[in-house]
Image 1: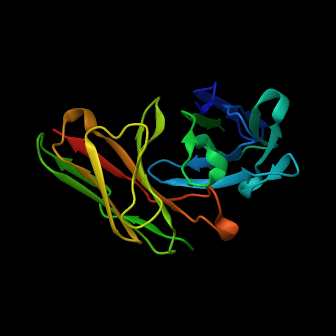
Image 2: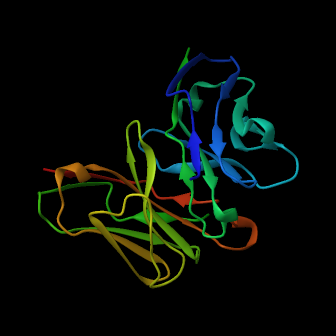
Length: 115
Length: 116
């Protein structure tokens, strides 16, 4: 069965430091991969997505992610974290080539930012 | 901008009550979803629908049903609410074609349901 693993439940970084959030997936074919962010009390917002092509994808708010097929990973990165990035981040995969639109989510990584 | 609207932000219901959670989207999306979000468990899919009057079970459908009579509206029904259904419920929609294809889901702000 398809699954998504986010190994880190909670990460704390200092403002201005770099960030990497890990995501590993289990899926037979090339998946459609996504990162979403959820600010406190809000719904989820799409940060970026990977369908095919260039394995380094750029998203909103200065985030990027790299698809590595050999490692079954899709890690999210940001060179310099801002206090407003404090939120919960979810990695997701769309099975069946996304034909039915449903997503399988990881359990999330909560990001705290120290001043 | 796509807007997904959930009818309530907070609800408090009694055990055994029938509960309706409503979700409306304004972008003519084919796909609509109901997720449940619990701390440490992430988002789990309850039901989804890829067309009017069509529904598919997700990972945790037990105790829930859904209704999609119109394309823009997707309702989640708790036939007899129980305390273990206390949770955050998130509705989402997505398109099956065009630039929003495949999984680019738009989420509502969520309904925090407490069953007492």
